[in-house]
Length: 65
Image 1 (cartoon, helix red, strand yellow):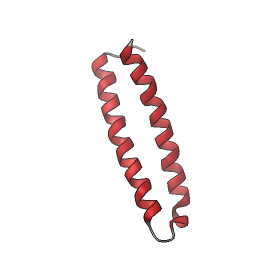
Image 2: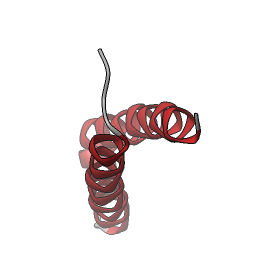
Image 3: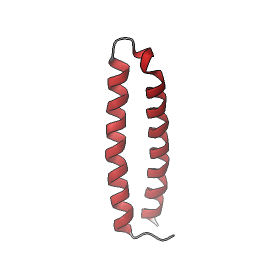
């Protein structure tokens, strides 16, 4: 599938926005009292961050071509 540079740039902006929100969510959960109660949510958010970072890496590579 082919995407224009504009499509890729917009996808990257959206991923960056989502990454920012996820990172803030992780900070919030980790700062709560009894943060161990939120362990599954923290783990899920960290896994999503990693997945979006990978997607961003591929998008950046594609834009540079």
